[in-house]
Image: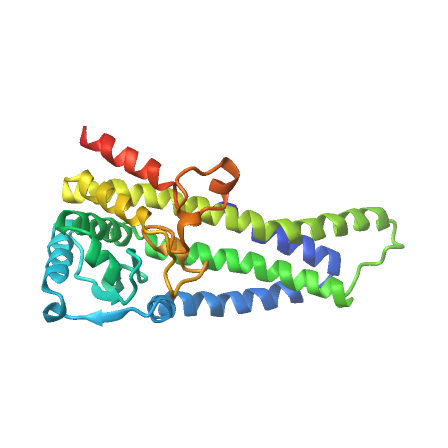
Length: 288
């Protein structure tokens, strides 16, 4: 997150210097603050709505409810809201700004394909995200990536249409000004890409952590390992999903190619999740 802040400050300084006008940065910050507030307070509702999740009560699915309730008690967490997504693809995610405002959603396909131990492993994984405040962290990181993209986009559009004031290039600093202009354009193009790479790296690390904490919560790593194995065998993507929310799910919901077990270093760099094979291997080593 410190790295993100440095990128934003660096971009702001470059663009303000080149244009000799802080207006771009001020506008970007205002929009970013509004975006952050909406994401923080309404992000979970938006994600649940876009995924087609439907809230349930205990009578609707007693077994799922009891698993969530028992594991929440074991983890020392408040009982989250429980949702079911009417989708054949086996998957699950947690969302919310903190444990008191958390929700756990699972697909109908997950309930059909997993046994009780495997389902417990998945729910424990998602509750670990809640307990570790990953649901808040990923919201903040997503907003920071949005800020970087927004500032960069405003700058590039301003350059394209010739808006914004310029410093006097005849004041003796024309050559430095030209160099800074080139650097700022390159930074505006590369910064959003770097931001996304960092965001995905954080997402992958939090998945490994949630796997480990979930296995400790159930004291049965094989349950989650077996669940991930079955989830990875399903090749079709979820019907209602997008790249913007893919990092929230226990496994990438975009289909077989994204779940790929044999990923090159370059593909891993832009992947929202660690390879399933690696996750299963680590979990089964925990059982030894």
